[in-house]
Length: 74
Image 1 (cartoon, rainbow, N blue to C red):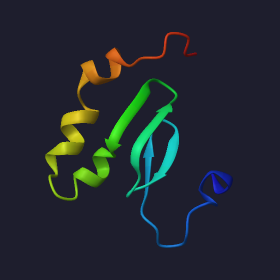
Image 2 (tube, rainbow, N blue to C red; image 1 turned 45 degrees about the horizontal axis):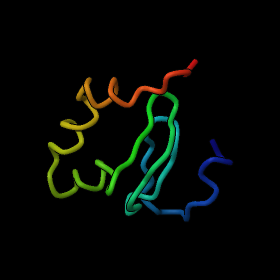
Image 3 (spheres, helix red, strand yellow; image 1 turned 180 degrees about the vertical axis):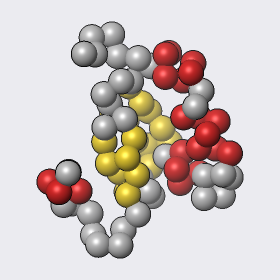
Image 4 (spheres, rainbow, N blue to C red; image 1 turned 90 degrees about the vertical axis):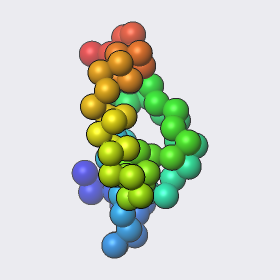
């Protein structure tokens, strides 16, 4: 884990999403995680600072995950 977060400054807010770490202020985030392929204008964690329901509405939505599931994930 230390190697995964060594690019961040002490005190910086970091988000963990599907196997990847991102600064909370990251924009236009696109990546293939452990489970799914993601393309987000803003991280739901950042949106949740203004609208707390944003985090749950996206990340607990089964269709969000199933529609983006990687075909060859192990």
